[in-house]
Length: 318
Length: 292
Image 1 (spheres, rainbow over the protein chains, first blue to last red):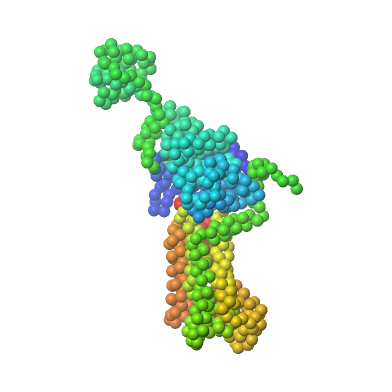
Image 2 (image 1 turned 90 degrees about the vertical axis):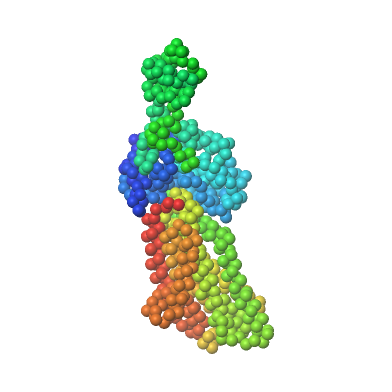
């Protein structure tokens, strides 16, 4: 069977009513309708325990859904796992290695596990993958001697053993230093530029914002929103921030000038900016005798959208 | 045939090769045998025959009579070194051999689930049935390897420390040394086959838990339990179905002519265990949610 190209409508990943209820009744994923467009870098966000990992495990055929369907590369999972998974590279919940084997032998083993991988090119492909993640020098070292960052790189190398049409990366920069994070992000951009669809879960909002063209937000097993990153970030409004020793008077003037949702907190007065030239607003404040120390427009971040959607802060500690 | 450019060979989608399991089986064998745990177990198995040989030699030199106590064939060792193969197997079969097999079998799936490598093998995708078959084959190969290690070490020790040559069977007839070697090889095969029951049981236990240690301990516990139960005459209805019941019947291969009934029963029992617990392991593993 040749590779099956997904229909443009289908999406590289498409779930309908995907649900997982664990024994004991806990509902981990509840009626998920997720669509990942081909060629996108898709950010998958959600606080701890929101069902992201269970979703990824269902997509990879590791966990059987209680109900609903999941299609990956246009084919049903887990039924078509043998056709789909060779075209998918995955890093799930961090790397897992054979500590007593070298980094190279770890990859040789995983490649041998793929019945469609050509054994004649195995060594060359393993060497190329190690080179790509910057582990060539440590390839002969036992994996138990690797640092967390090196283990993470080896996990990524396993996902890159063959050209993939989809990469599922769960927290790919976990454990890496800032330099390592930059390298991996550059790598992800390169892969995406080659046309690989990247499904990326991360707790680093700025990472998602930098990398992802699309994203989805989950909380308590349900999908709260999905779409293009730009559209979702636009969902949160910018805030006008005025710093002043006269907050009461400033709040009154801002309301007069048409600012909505005005709140004062100490010497900071914030509100949604009115639809008029902000220079006029500042002039009005000064004319009313408000002593202005600072007058800024704070751009809405993805974090604001996230908090607005989930009603809770992002669990940075994971 | 021109050699394909590696890049295009990679890009081309290949169907599963005809020998699709062999690469994984080789990888599985190497991964299992490179573990320190497996090497230590094989080392202990190799040491037991040396220990027995030296003790028998020292006692014989001291003029002590080789009494009836001790493992089977102990008395014959001083007459013919080849008997050390049988003695060593009789000494290791109650515990050391099944323990080694139990550790490797128990660890097979649960150990990988424990460290999380199981999920990466399955998304590779190894295929659940294929992976289980490869694990099963590896455990069976380990049964044979462990038995061979004991036999080889015993043969070497026996040849070095004791006279060899024509040997007398239990029935009192004499067979040539070559014939004796062939029988010893047959003994190795029968002993290895008689470990398949515990291997199947261990593999099944291994699919039930995500803790390698728990699976290994349970399997080794079953070895001990089976042999304790086999001591009770009151359990005569159950005893013939214990995987360890016919273990020592390999001695019947040293009779002339070979006495087959118990051997056949024993091997049949191992086939039964393999079928029952192999199927149970497959039923469990093919539907299991992998959450580690």
